[in-house]
Amino acid sequence: MSNRFSRRRFIQGSLAASAAMTLTGVTRNVLGANEKLRIACVGTDGQASFSIDGCGSEQFICFADCDDNKLQRRAKTHEGSKLYHDYREMLTKEEKNIDAVIVGTPDHHHAPATARAIMLGKHVYCEKPLTHTVREARTIIELAKKHKVVTQMGTQIHAGDNYRRVVEFIQSGSIGAVKRVHTWVGAVWAGADNVAHPPVPKNLNWDLWLGAAPFREYHTGLHPAAWRGYWDFGGGGYADMACHHLDLAFWTLGLRAPTSVSCQGPVVDSNRAAAWNICDYQFPAREAGKAGHGGFLGETSRNPGGPAVHLTWYNGDKRPPEIESGKLPNFGAGNLFIGDKGILFADYGQMKLFDLDYKPVEKIDHPEHFIANSAGHHREWIDACKAGYETGKTTCNFDYAGTLTEAVLLGNVSYRSGKEIKWDAKALKTDAAEANKFLDKEYRKGWTLAEGQA
Image (cartoon, rainbow, N blue to C red):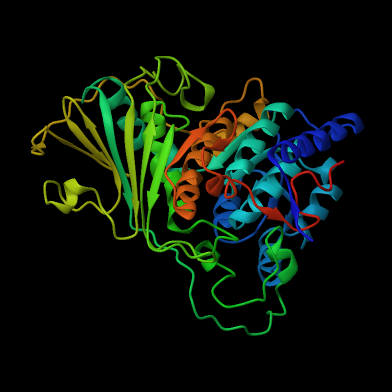
């Protein structure tokens, strides 16, 4: 039996469950700077492993993984930690023993695990994209604000020095007003058409791996990595990489919700994500000092405001016309900011300046730094958790990261519906019924964001 929530039921259910937790008491500890953060980790390999290493200075109390082989390997690196296959059980039983939770799972588990942790009053670090659906992103944003927990989404490149220098350069007016942005990456995660159905590996609890997703028979090309190519679990190369690359444009220009989204790609498959997409976003003009980066204006961004922005996203083998025509070198991935005084290309580690005729400018005059280098993406979160919600600051907190995630996932909403959509961010809906159904999804019993907490 499906368990489909309307937006009102979805959010009210989650908030009602969180209210029940408030009545029964939430375990929240205040830590000194020299005390170790007590962490529960949902997932033990891949990106979860990266975050475990990144938080290696702290204490890992427990781990959950539905793959017993991975869980047992993790046990050898953290002797004495408690092991669970079901993170719902772990969070319930270990509530009083933990301060924070790391979520490093396939996308479809992000919101169910994150919501449960937040409702218990735990600080959360969750990998990108923050959620699997637009509606989940909004719910997580609201829950984090309600429970006043420290949050950070795992867009680790945000802590890189180059991103900070790009933000400073553009916000200082070095290329003038920016009205046009192109962002692209070669990532492709398109599910396979013909798959084999061998027996479920003995080490894998397939029902737990599926989680909220509709039941399907186990098949190759899902666990442990290729799940991104299927709508039930991920969102293709688009959802995988756009939070990393669009992050720079959002931060630099102070972008929030788009007003319209129009996405094209190959013929839509109801099961498999697209091999390529080109998606056009329209963003409204921004008033200086409004809707800035991460809710911490003046600390990580000057946010000077700016005109309306047309941003185009490309993934797969698609590239901006400036590259396709040969006006610019074939950069593998990155952002192209087109201002009325100049053009800047930037990726994770470099920035290249061009004049309006696309000729390279060899000397870049950088402004005086006004964004401090990061102590590290995980370190930011650890220090903020210890300082507490009112004092601790993270640059990819869920207000900022959730809004970025909403915009990213709206691209797939437009593509799957075959519609250009007008986006009403306040009402959390589009102008097209065909698109609105992709804002949400069905949940198997036991996996909705509200279940298990009341």
